[in-house]
Structures are given as C-alpha cells and as structure tokens.
Image (tube, rainbow, N blue to C red; front, top):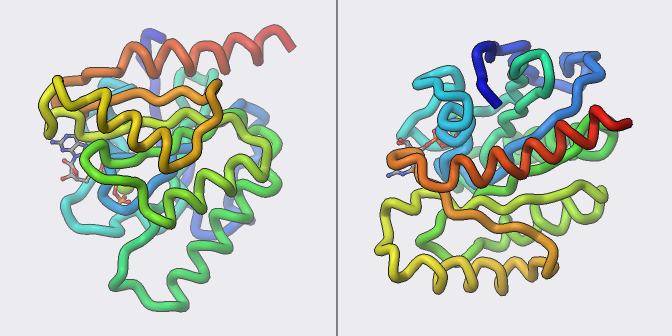
Length: 199
Ligand code: GTP
Ligand code: MG
C-alpha cells in the first residue's frame, strides 16, 4: 500500500474508548520492548507516529491508528515487564482481553517475538489466546539485524516449534533498522484488506 495518510485515532485506556469504526483492524501484540511501535512506524514509513522507547512498558494503552481510511493498526501494550504492579498487570489483562474477545472488526493479529530468544511463557499464552478467539495470526520475529543471516532459519524454526505454530501460520523475520521483511508483511496484510473488499 502506498501509505500517504496515517494518523492516531485514539489512545484508549478502557473499552468505552475503543473507536466505533467498522474498518478492519490489524493488532500488534508482544512483550514490552519487542518492537511493536517500531514495526508500525516501519510499515507506515513514519519515524515516530507510534511512540517508541528504550524505556520498557512505554505503551500502557491501546493505540488506534487510521491507515489510509482503509484499515486500522492497533498498538497493544507490551506484556511481561516484571516491575509493574499486580494491579497494573491485571488491568492490562482486562484491557487486552476486552479487546480480543469482542472486537468483530479485528481481522488479524501480528504477534511479535524477539528473533534472538526462545519465546517466553507469556508469548505462548498470547498465541493460545489469539487462537482461542479464532483470530488469524502472523508471527513477526523482530530485531533480525541483531543476528547473522546464516542463523536466521535456525532461530525461526525454534520460535515456530516453541510456540507450536500450525503449519499454515506465517512467520517472518523483520528489522526496523534495515526494513528487512517489510514487503513480505505488507503482502500478507494486503490479503486482509482485499478479503474485506470482496465481502
Ligand atoms: P512497549 O511499547 O514498551 O511495549 O515496546 P515496543 O514493543 O513498542 O518496542 P519499541 O518499538 O518501542 O522498541 C523498543 C526498543 O527496541 C527501541 O529502542 C527500538 O529502537 C528498538 N528496536 C525496535 N525494533 C528494532 C529492530 O528491528 N532492530 C533493532 N536493532 N532495534 C529495534
Ligand atoms: Mg510501544
């Protein structure tokens, strides 16, 4: 997609603030600091539309972005940061589950994992949650610039095995630095948009 328009719709701290729009949505989920906001910016050719930070747990709200009036990108708050309180963790869980469980417009979840590490328990729970709510999943292995190219397939197959991905599930290596994987991800997202147009 030639993205000429991308804007923040709302930063939602609770369900009541989710936009009413009927536009199909792609949500980006993953551990804190894994690169969700960087992936969104990379796909949209923007430097800082989605706020990124080296400070963990930066995004604590669900941020909705309008892309070309065609699709919404949804930046979910990162999980797994040890230093947040139990109360914060519970409110995170409620917010995400509220979003995943009854968002009819949610067509696609992009689950991000760091290509360097084996998936965490939380990553596995997130994958199972997505499957439980019958949402389509694409796994994106981020920070691909941090490993040698020769190691790429090895890392991808560890992630595939540990998350127990279905054979049909797609996994793509991405780097926000080199933009490796960007076209491949867009090709899959285009399928979501085109399916929508046929309905
Ligand atoms: P939260 O909102 O806290 O959950 O984090 P996030 O998943 O949105 O991560 P964010 O995009 O803010 O990136 C976290 C840090 O990782 C930043 O310092 C980014 O610059 C860095 N980063 C993200 N993607 C990449 C990548 O592909 N390669 C490298 N080298 N660094 C990356
Ligand atoms: Mg973020």
